Amino acid sequence: ILTEDMIMPNMIIFLDADLDVLKSRIAKRNRSFEHQIEDEYLLKLKKDYREYYESLQSNGSNVVLIDTTSIDFLKNEQDYEDILHIILPMIGDITNE
Image 1 (cartoon, one colour):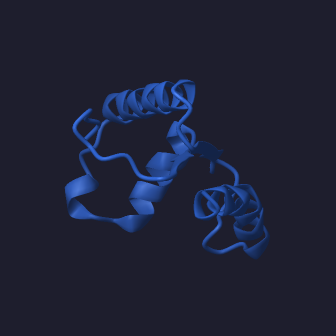
Image 2: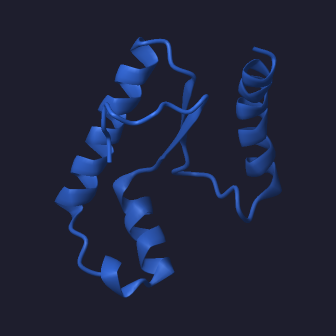
């Protein structure tokens, strides 16, 4: 999924969380095809996405990494507002280019 052939979007938002939180969220979704996901796979995926984020950031791409370990922007309005506070200025930068 991380390919050089991909057309780059104007902005990328990476949502990250600790392993225990990821596992809890997966369990809550209760999707049968996710029941067998192993910790090693999730840790590798987190590592790969972190490296991809860092490479995009070092190349000057418009990226942001948000740690969602202790927030729930779907159920907590303040968490949602906090994320908007982070990304809205970036959206403004995109639309004003």
